[in-house]
Amino acid sequence: MRALVRVFDRFLCRATGVFEFCDRPDCLLRLQWARAPHDLSLSDGTQVRAGAPVLMLHLWNEHLPQPSANGPDLRWAVRVHRMLTRSLEEGARWLAAHPQGDQVEAVGGITVLALSADGRPTPLVRHLGFDIFPYRRALGRFGEFWENFYTWAIMWTFNPASLRGRSLLRLRRAEIWMSQKSFLRQYLKSGKAEWEH
Image (cartoon, rainbow, N blue to C red; front, side):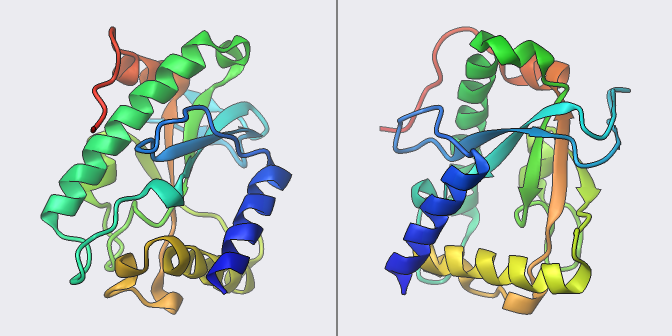
């Protein structure tokens, strides 16, 4: 069953244009050229209209560190935060060097990492500097169930320990967004990212 999920995940990435921009095994992100799904009012004053070019971030599930048998703990969270920060820095350098980068108005994605079980923003995403928005599901509760099912299957396949304390029916998503200017200003740093060895 896990092999089937892996095959379907690879197929879905190819079909939706999700691509790898970094070949490091400790890079936690893949990217996708996309269009803003709706209007966005960002905290730095940037107004993004629906349909504007954006860069979507996707978690690279195979590269996510395995938590302990008891589930994610503080040590795991610190490691993931460090890896995400370095992946975002690498992504900012890639975006700044890419010809399409100037057209991008915002950088963001949809994730279950943004909200805790009680619906509050998690420290992980707040510290990364993204604005957090409610996720707008195209198909309502029906769509929510199948998205949760797919997310649960991905977590079960690539990182089963991360399911500890998480219910299929209670996975909560949020949108995270940052303007292109703020993203580059925060993550485009001189020198090379210091990756884990």
